[in-house]
Length: 280
Ligand SMILES: Nc1ncnc2c1ncn2[C@@H]1O[C@H](COP(=O)(O)OP(=O)(O)OP(=O)(O)O)[C@@H](O)[C@H]1O
Ligand SMILES: [Mg+2]
Image 1 (cartoon, protein in one colour):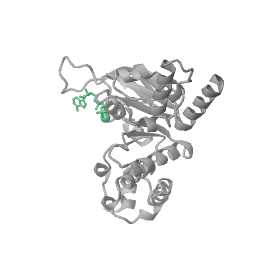
Image 2 (spheres, protein in one colour; image 1 turned 45 degrees about the vertical axis):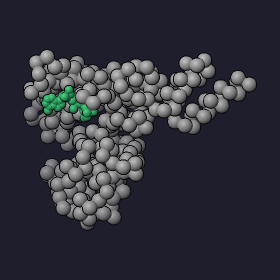
Image 3 (cartoon, helix red, strand yellow; image 1 turned 135 degrees about the vertical axis):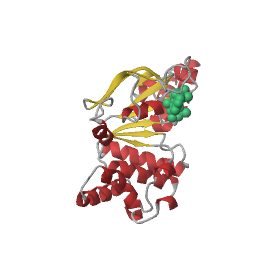
């Protein structure tokens, strides 16, 4: 479990009058959860992500990863092993000239013995569906493939928690789909706890839980079905909701008794049919 307790984070270079990047944030994230974090630019999402695996240490408050504090110098390596990070730009995450070496890099640095390392790399490449590229040069892969290799590299370190900071932001629709399918597989089949920072609503609806950040603080927290129907609160901070949720919301405003807890086209159509049958 990840426990975030009254965390404040101020960048040293920030102006005196600037609000802290993370401002009194408390959250618990359970093992096995798939959490999506949404928020406008500058709302503190990346800062929070970096705090979760100890790249940044809170100015105030505390973060515990399975009981280990990120502020403790003795535990920081165990924490980095438990909580892996995947970043936005796949090119910046490539460290080797062959896929298998790239995937092995992190685990090798943890001191994993070579026989086990080989097994872990093969397994990780299999999970992300990149086995056939084992001998390829990473820089020749597509964006989505590079990002899956980056995920495999984290996976080979065998973390319980995987934090992904806008992993699909630089990908084309096909790459986005590949990476999202991989992320969902990690959660459902490998039982990894996923913390996915995203700007895409269609990705956030796939999570078990959505946290919406504003000015370094969570303002909404719940299942997508509970959070997204709060259309006005979400729009007020400059974010969108899934198109079908908004449509149901607008119809309801016009007096049509729609349930606004719809998250995809099928649910919308079903709800509309229910309402129409009732009206007739
Ligand atoms: N290295 C830094 N030094 C000073 N201030 C920073 C630094 N990095 C981020 N900030 C500030 O901290 C706040 C939160 O930034 P952060 O990058 O966490 O936001 P974000 O939600 O990830 O935004 P985005 O959606 O654009 O990625 C912003 O006001 C930003 O300007
Ligand atoms: Mg960011």
